[in-house]
Image 1: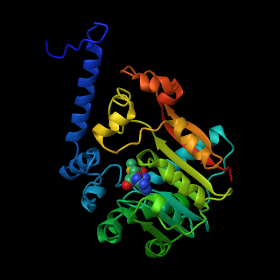
Image 2: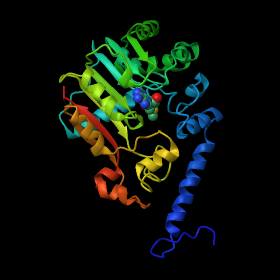
Image 3: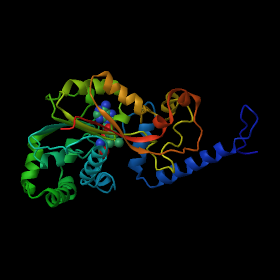
Image 4: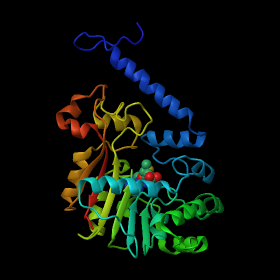
Length: 315
Ligand SMILES: C[S@@+](CC[C@H](N)C(=O)[O-])C[C@H]1O[C@@H](n2cnc3c(N)ncnc32)[C@H](O)[C@@H]1O
């Protein structure tokens, strides 16, 4: 009979099968919302041999609910600092005259425009998908930076006019189109940030090692790491724990590195970076299968923590 999967102990695995169908349906629904270019990019990321997708286009980025809103980075920072402050002593980041570094800022410079508007002396990032020409084009200036500038003025006051803002971005922002561990940063950094990046880095150890070399004990940092499956499924861990991580990565390509909270915490500790590792979203009650590989190595906290913030020092 179609879909009747018999387990080793003879039970029929209907629940596992229906979960599989549900996961496939929600993935399909998600895929149908994407433009052809976005689908191609996703497909290429998921295939082990073809890592990078096609370059972003301005139309695609500016019509994206995620990428098209520059103020998203301000909202993220406000939320993340509020979560950190609830758990450890923390003074909000002050960008004035600071050298700011971001790992994997994304195609529209991530926290860069916010940092520069708030007075950063410099903003540097390493982003393998960076396209300087696209960022310097009219579409990004008119439809992204102008609105972002207006939002920043409303929030923080008239620090600079739009032409001054554009000039400051030109002069004080440097984004290297390469992996973070290879980038020639002007060290040391005063502030280091990353947003949903560390879970995508292969191998993460080399990047944390590089971080340790551009930081001092005074460098303030805030990293958001997302351990979910990165699909809009009902449960953020759907499909992740059905098999050991190497099998998941072999099937789907190097999209997420499958490390969990204790692994990332350990990489920072191994480099002597004193960090608070703060859970920012725990989603218990995952009903799907969990392979013994995961159960033997991780407790529930590690398995069901979706978001963490890695922060330090308090400032
Ligand atoms: C989910 S995206 C997040 C982008 C951006 N931070 C944001 O929130 O919009 C992950 C980013 O990490 C970047 N990335 C992956 N591996 C990297 C590496 N080794 N060094 C620097 N960036 C990397 C990718 O190119 C991608 O832009």
